Length: 521
Image (cartoon, rainbow, N blue to C red):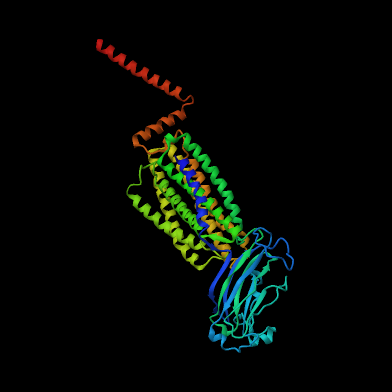
């Protein structure tokens, strides 16, 4: 039955993909819906996106016709219907026939060339726009963005100028493609240095493309990773189902929970792969599919943590139920699920850039605190369970729990070490210049969770002897352990026990004969 239910669950991704076709959000395609330019220093600007982009595999001809193929080997940023809107009051300040009544500049630069934008006249605060003092010192043009050519390519940072004419309320940039010849983290800004254009807005969209599709550079390796993880979960599911069917008469309640975690993990990997594949081919990220995978992921993490906590408490081994702790465990699970799903929705649903937002950083804290509390509770419960098993001299169960505790300790140590590395990685890379290795940060947690799940499946796999680590009354449990220890100590197994029984039988018969003889006398 469990295997049939897993097969039914595997059909959900297909249905989800069909539903998600009707609801999608543009992600690698950055949308600007009359976004206002905000005052930063002496400039007015709005961010147009930040993504890791790999270099093109070949350089297209100057007048290359437009193609919409996602896998054509080209990398570019394409501008579509980019329109700038200014207020009527700002437009009326200029003559009707003025050729240039307002300048807007589009700046594209690679993270390594960030210092090539802006300047400082006397070593003070850095200015984005050229002032009168900077015009004298650096030779820039007053009222425009300060740009210093890159050492590797004089055409970069790329600057595109858009001019208002007369009293136009709006001006549109012609469709244009900027090809990427160098791999890097690219940033796009719409900037105006004209105080009269304060409050200006921008609409339209930009399409960011890598050689193999529309996935942002940091996300691109994750599509292959989730394909590999899907295969790994399929193999684990096949092995577990085989054991489940062979020994279905001996299945324990604990093994039902393990089956559910495996099914959720498999579904999560499948959904992630289809989410990234659809995103890579179309440039649009489906809200429906991403929401499904985020929900399944939060559910899997919650159930797996509650499973580990229940095992640590001795559920199904030392105690038949959790008793009065059930309510507390469920309340903790619900709280963790809410914190996890809020974090995942913020991080993945509608993701545009390769740079995490501030909202995600704020939501990480409650999730981390709940994880720390869970770890403390798990190890406290595990310590008590080990003490109970030692007191009862349950050698088989004690051996299993020792192996589980060792695996859990290794997992916690690896998690703490990885968190330290992640903090170091992000602290030493504030501009995401090492974005090509950033996918490992996400992938590690899935690998670690899969490894711990494999250990649990190995220790509590369905078998003919599953009942040996199932809960039973104390007296029967001790008798089973004593019998098993006798079998292990006697080289010939059951034959030794038969001989012992015979010896005991002969001794008892001799005593009875002596008693009868005494009575006759």
